[in-house]
Image 1 (spheres, one colour):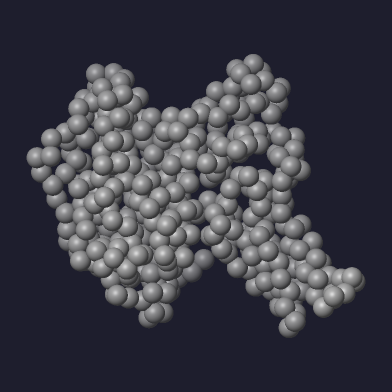
Image 2: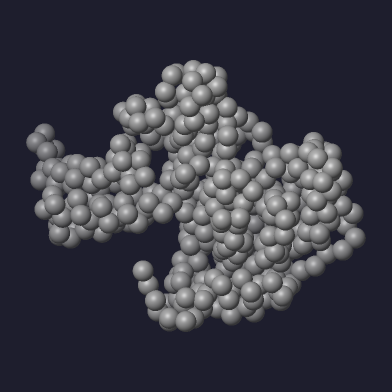
Length: 170
Length: 250
């Protein structure tokens, strides 16, 4: 029990996590499910069964099914044949779980990352101040709070006139 | 108790499914592309919530029925949604007012349900609350824009309020099923949410320069399976594939 060396089980878990963490969001292919915070836990049992726990960003996110299939494929490629994917709702996913690396990848991809610390209940008519991912201007306006996927809103930059997606706070 | 809890969760699931299905009818018909995306996204959130609730209802019932059996193979009289959500889309104002009434109720409802002693319902509630806050903001902003817009948009929105007003009260009804589940620490006292709903509705209507309708009529029955003539038509479309090709899967 009191051993400094990593136990075989731990190494297995780490290996399994690494494999699952390579899976990308099919809608935002620059982000992995680890960047997103969708990947919650990976446990490999003594029997060799790997249980991957994920949580949806939005209740109706249709990408979940694809992610599940991709996880099974990635795990198989890494040598795990006995794999189960579990979906949990609690604690509810929040954009605060998006990694710093993930935020940078989003910006480079042309999607404005969520404004921090506003995942708490917003005022009825509250608006986020979002910087344009193209030119960096804060002179932007919201076109619609609903965009091409559940997790994005539509914005427009008044400075460079480009429309852009905003990964909205949840 | 298991029977009351099953019905209670089913009512919630049916509300979200039927309203989500109604919003889906706007696909290809919404006034602008942005609004098309918004209505479809909101419908998708509701569908996702309904799926979690149906799955849980099936587990409570314990007869092996899953989300698909509950959604696609129950006849009209076994559907327990409130009458409000099955009302036709009408014009854009009717759709928006229906959504506004529902979202103004669901925000305090999920907020209270998040404290449920039932772990699954509490988890679904915490997740759904974040989503309906967006829905409430969306419909509130539209009510204000329409009410405060042109003479025609104002008139249509006032008409929509009058047309749907009497269906709102069913959301707050506490019958034996709801009381039993609430008293066991699992359900929500919906009647107690009325003041918050009133405050939200009054604040938005005032900004929209619209008039709060008088409580001159009300209609309920959906919670016990007595529906308006509209539900059967929704189900005929919703259930068509499973009825025609039983057991069909993707």
